[in-house]
Length: 250
Image (cartoon, rainbow, N blue to C red; front, side, top):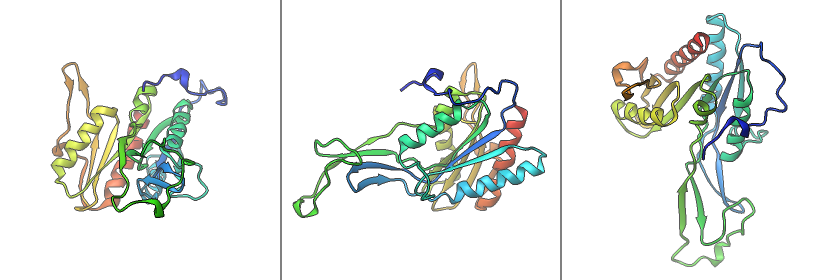
């Protein structure tokens, strides 16, 4: 699906043509995708990294003598008072952030559910017919999975002036494989900065987004990493400094 600026609601945004963008929006937590009433798929994440990274951005603010506002938007999985629950909710919130001329940076640490599932011929939804366990045979039920759409690319597509950060999670892969998968994400979404984290090895790799030249996409290598190691706090701290420095440079 293609987006354009006309699709974003800007009616509630005050005129700020002479105001320099000074807001950073950080998305965190996990999302669900409804299948049936009282049944959903989910990407479990509880916002700890988004909270920690937001605090590190504030620290970097002071160290760099900057004054960016940090807007932390957690999903309901990470904050019971949040109205962000599904991928669609996060998409609407992201579009709102991108329609705001004050937005200077977007951090997409939210774990979006990668699949939507359907059982039988019943369209999936929060209020779709509830499954009855006593009516399920020994053969069980078939669940058809289809991938959900990616949202990270919206940042560059709609606001190429906004500096973005994306996170790539792997499981028991080498640093070189982490970089390769980060490159693929960067090529598809055109993000500014990437943090690859492996949930098994605990290795973290901080990389600048891949440049594009007249001859095409230029992938990063492990040698290009600003950080590669197992100390998560160091990776986030370096990423926060590089992120704010990039915004400051414009």
